[in-house]
Length: 511
Image (cartoon, rainbow, N blue to C red; front, side):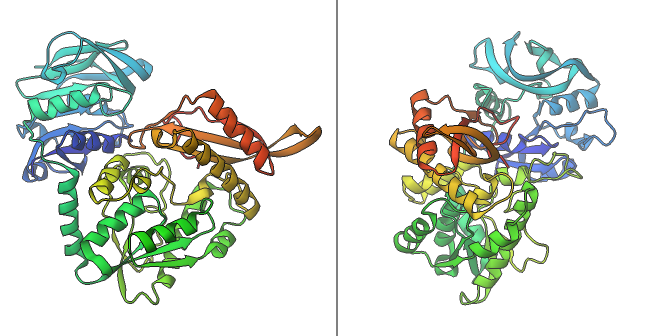
């Protein structure tokens, strides 16, 4: 298959690059930065992208590629740190910038380039770097500049080497997809062959080859990821799949009944329900650290599975709805240069003694790709376009210690948010909308009496893939309605605030 090889130098956006390339109809594959050039050649790649990364090219232990990649004769595009690597290895100079360039900027083209074909002279871009190119390697010329970089885009057309100091892959560079598409089509000559239908066909074949005649169990939450994973697995192996729904006591209002109705009655998938809320809440008692919460939930989740599989028959495989963002946000510092953001219960919470082999059919997909797979499989809009819900459930939205009383407050507040978003027609317009219970109490006045009750934060964000997000400028009247209902209807809450933090620097969930 024709594809683009992405060398990962630790950027939090590496898999966003992969997503954007696939969005252009071209398959992308991520390789460790140390991958030998011979492996890249043998893979059949039509071009190479060098990702960004948190390091300085001159730092001790900074990730460096196999220098032989520059001799493969393949087009190369360096992004941010990738551009700096091009300069460093080909005779240019990189130095610390006078100031860190972070956030929005303006790119101004100076000469024509296949990278900018079809684009206006000036476009908005997104920067995130400290070091910058100060001297061009021999054979390179300037294509475009930005406010803080005279070498925002550079090129060596003879060798088909290109570099840019900004991030074309993120949503905050609106024309960035067009730049990447130009690299794929006009420079690498890649045909448009990657579709979700082809993904389904390949994945069904892969699942059948991996599983054979063995049985698989899948943890079903009712969210988009597990629902699509269930449908995909069911198409591949039919009744070899048993879905197990674990009520961990951390679910939203009416969640348990909705899941049982949907999958047991509607989708006709074998479903076993386990009420394990008591054990989860007991283990979480007194725990306040977010990472410990995730580890505890992940570990108990698998152990409940090991117990629940009794009566299902001999089970060899555990299926999970792990996605690309789950993986990239769970990578620890070490041989992989990416910085740890937070572990994911699907990735970082599994105990070493786990007795299952994993099946992760969605591991290479972003959320919007998963939705498209769901549509291809014939799932309803209510399932496919349901807003994301974290695997650890309300545990990561109930800050501090988790108690039944606090969960009850959070459930009711969260239900009000979703109810009003649906009534106002906003639910399907945004990425996520939910409530967070803060470990903060404040003084209030209700019914002429003094109160000292809890604070709820409302979080509503827009995003394309979950890797970057911005808070939504909601109609004030709708926010007022949500706030009034929460304070009036949810006992124990007397203050409501709205979270106006983007990602980055924050994350979508609070923990």
